[in-house]
Length: 130
Image 1 (cartoon, rainbow, N blue to C red):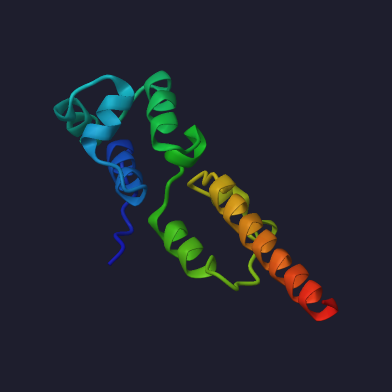
Image 2: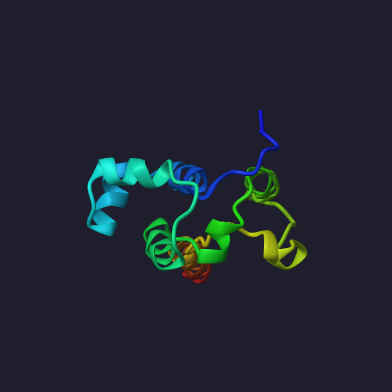
């Protein structure tokens, strides 16, 4: 159940961390602080922008994405981004986007699969000629 009460910045950090599948230890390592210090950050109601920029970088999100994090947008994006979906980034209000996903690995995987498929087609054509 989604709570309509706005999240403080610490809770936003915690939620994004969990959505990204990161532990407090991993965040702490990225910030060069202890797990306990990360826990304290996640309980904070306010954090200065300089520190938030560092936290956002470790979480793999933008500063604005972290500050404007809304659970309902995560659920909306999750419901609308699945394989075979016709929803595109251009059809969604990008001001509400929270996470910056780096799709390079997915792109590489898609190209490798495409290349494999094309090689199989070539092999079939060569076998028909022979």
